[in-house]
Image 1 (cartoon, one colour):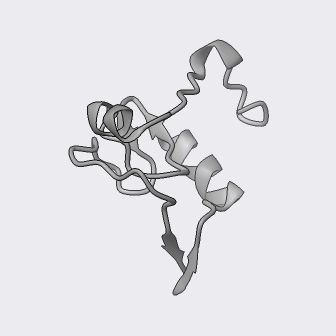
Image 2: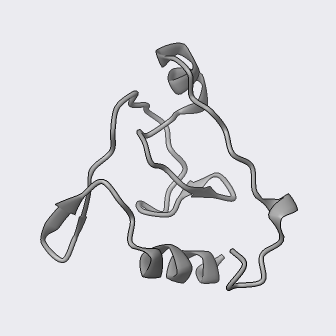
Length: 78
């Protein structure tokens, strides 16, 4: 965010403490990043939920981390 000039007051960090919170928030698993209610990985607003670790696939490899360059690119698109 600092590299892109996005101010901290535009960031909201939410703790998902239990499965009920995950369901209420349509949480997709950890880690998840939403911008304007849209998931930066799928590009859509979540509807279902998952209370688990989240796996992503980049270049045919599964990982539990969204690469920094992917986050930067997606943030620039918004």
